[in-house]
Length: 96
Length: 245
Image 1 (cartoon, one colour):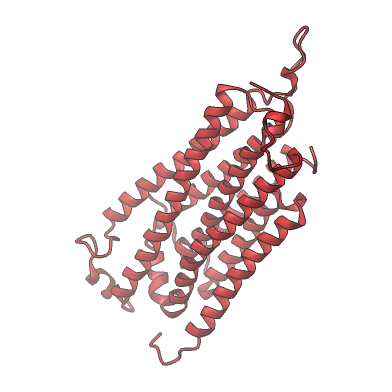
Image 2 (cartoon, chains in turn purple, orange):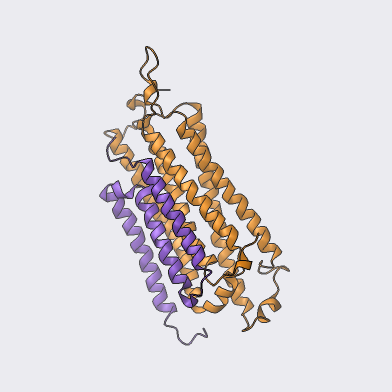
């Protein structure tokens, strides 16, 4: 085969970390965090997604072309999200 | 079942590595378009979550966080079994050489069908839990636009919650989890197709590309759920009484 084959041990370790993060994110929702709930939840979700992408989806050992496509998709989504929110978050005449 | 690379190589490619790279690139590009689909839904949700934070949080508290958490564990486990299936498809299984023969040592053995079956079963388990959850939502008066939604239940809270905004949240919830469930069903079908192929005749390690590519799709569906969980279910504070079916 061409590139490195990720070993099953790596998969199990990543899975254990994902489980821990899930416990953290669900458990965190039982604490008194006020408006930080969604921020903490999203931050943990980003870490989980990065782990899945790098290891389960093999992006870590993949060619630069795959990195480019993944990065382009994320960048596009970033534009969509940020530019849309610059509109919705600055309409102060709406009743919040 | 032919194990020579010649039968796996399509005409337009120079060698198997190039073909495999093209398969992978094709799936990554498709996943980028799937990001277009879910990205639009997420952006819509973000915009209204920013505007109606209080009402969305109040509504989020009523979703079944226990089933949401169980489903997260189920999908993460299915991603693990899918990754292990791809690994089983790539590596030759440690079978001893049969006397006088030499082709069988390169087959993926029983591990590939096992992990594919586990992945499909975990996916089905997710769908079962989702169906149960939709029933509990129906039972708890969380179906907008029907008799199973009581606006008075929301305006009577202290401070009052706007029932129209709650209905908006619930529409986002049903549509986002519904489209996710459709994607998951397609994924289960694809994994089932792989399973049928792997059972009918062993897949040679050189031909592991379909397994990897369907694995990429499966992990993407998992990632969508990873984000759906905090946005929909963990938006507000929960108490231990919220842990029920």
